[in-house]
Length: 153
Image (cartoon, rainbow, N blue to C red; front, top):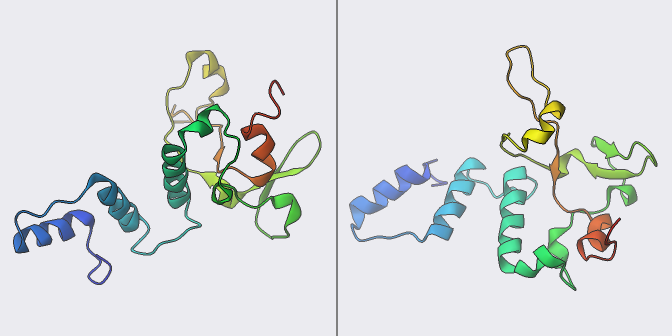
């Protein structure tokens, strides 16, 4: 795929021509589609890669959904409040603490969402709904909340 800049489909079809009984497992196929989307380079700073990595970690550690006693370090981005960077940062309106950097934002499909929140979804001149939400990768300062230490806060 990398050498000839082939899409997954093209590479798979070429492989099928050489060996008809070839099978690709679905997990590997998913990785190859991501590899193609990242232009045949593994870019760990890519939002697509980050989203894939988080998905795999939550599959590996289903207890994260209930608040695990210990989280793997690789799921957290470094705390932007403790690092200097010229990258755009997002801060709390009230206390002005740096919450996350632009590179932590994960892309997502704009969905319908709950109708109760429709008043919060502005539309542009064409009537297309614009999303006002940010989905971000976990950041180090979130660890106590993810562990359930801050229940009710």
